[in-house]
Length: 111
Image 1 (tube, one colour):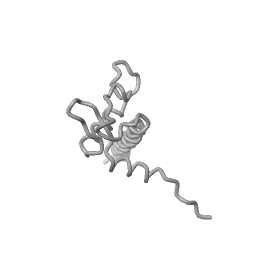
Image 2 (cartoon, one colour):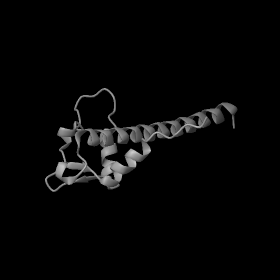
Image 3 (cartoon, helix red, strand yellow):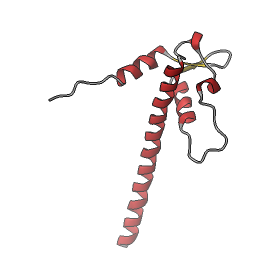
Image 4 (cartoon, helix red, strand yellow):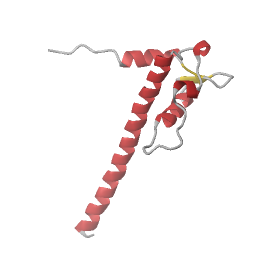
């Protein structure tokens, strides 16, 4: 094969891997933001559950950039970290709340 073709294929593969990694990074960042919203709004139990619009997570019709928060919310729901009440409100589970707090604790720095 021609070296140019091989280089082109290699660049395409690297681009594909990079775009997949970037999308995953954005979803992970959006998931942390969604969890922060639940905590800030106090939606951490079924009694304190809030609607999507109350949480400020409703989809906006006209956005120039892609909003990964809806995808992150879907993933959190699927994994049981966010639950939905019978009346359609949402809350963060205790497990997710504790995991989020543990991941955001400062670790002592070695000197």
